Image (cartoon, rainbow, N blue to C red; front, side, top):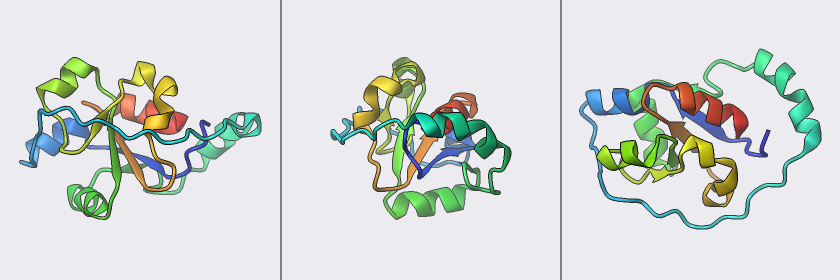
Length: 132
């Protein structure tokens, strides 16, 4: 809907990441500024049909090994939890854009590399990924 065509939700989210024993960071990651894509009204009208025919694995990735591989290959990570949750621990190198501010911060998300969105349970990540 918002012009991003390469974003996915990490289905296991932060809980799955930390329970798998993966590293957790507490430092604030500052995002670069990117140019946000232009929103195309025709795409908004087509969203319902698109979401009804999502290919397997297109919008979500729950496998930690594949997720780590994507990170190693330069995936961009966005934590859409509230800042207080992010500060308690987050996936290293993930920037924090709370879901309620996503539309105002599109210039922090690149359009030329894979983007993975996560939260605590997967709910906010799924909404954010569908919006992107």
